[in-house]
Image 1 (spheres, helix red, strand yellow):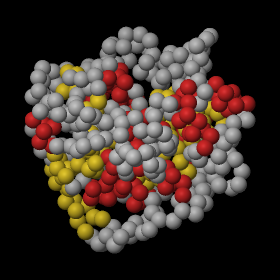
Image 2: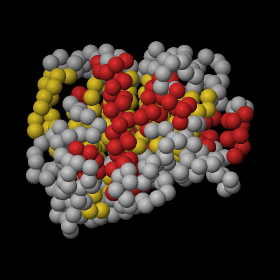
Image 3: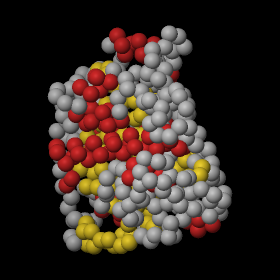
Image 4: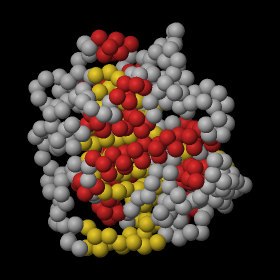
Length: 469
């Protein structure tokens, strides 16, 4: 792929950071997933901040939709039977992050009034916009500020710097989180219009997700009732299939860059190695999401219900996307979402929530291994976080006292209690490794009495914007 040669220029950091400056940061324990109400305290670590950073080449942001600390804890306890193990590996930096769309986060109220965090929580569109642009907006809004003015996404900043860009999700490709990193629309539910913006006018190089119009939630072909809204409508889909869809010039070489469509699992797997097309649209042959809405007992323990074997895993999609994007010599920005954890949590499906989180964690591990083998951490930033907490998950019989989850051994669901079927304003974990993670720590200048230092979701975008200058 040709490197993007945009003409956008950004001002340098105001004032170089001092060499050897040591910033003491309260960091969560290595598990970074303590149960609510745990008496475990944060500890102090320190690390240097370099005065002159080498140019960052790879930025990879993982978002586990709807996951709070206890969702990660539940997966840790199921997988390992222990709290001090991370299903997605160890990270040198773990912080907390606030997610509200309007208003603020009050640490004292959050831990003294159970009703506080359940009132006026963000939705995924507003949260994604905040994490992608550094600007708060109203719920239901994508890529616009609270006044309806267009704001600039991280992908757009990356493209102006010549980087390739990509979006991967386990849910419909134009759902709230993926579209919240590229589109500019007042109504997050106008899926056909959002998909058209993503497929026709955006210059993103890779988009992958679910929402295939010809398949159901079990990955089986539909005889009728085809749903085209997540691929831009029936006309857009057929034009895409025929190769006649008008598209943007993604690599800025003066020629429109048509999508190479990938659908079958074997095609996603093939993308992981060897030569690839320069621009890829991956629409997995399944309806709403890869696994969470498959038929069978939705309240069963993890993996009791057979999984859809005809669709790719999130890890396969992420590695395929990277193999396309890393052809760009200027590097890439990639957002990967595990989107259906939120849906499982909204329905209080403990087993499927853990399944989704383990699938997400496997994708994180696969990408970490790719960095170890094919890149350098000195030029790569990996962030793992969430857009909001869903379900107000606590230990059993909490009744407002935020009891911890109870371990029942590896391979068994921990004892836990759902206290909501909606989003909350609880803090979520943010872990990072590699170039620029020290900058994220600088933004964590507020302190929660349980979670320790935290930054806001807008500050995640602001930090990455600085790295892209």
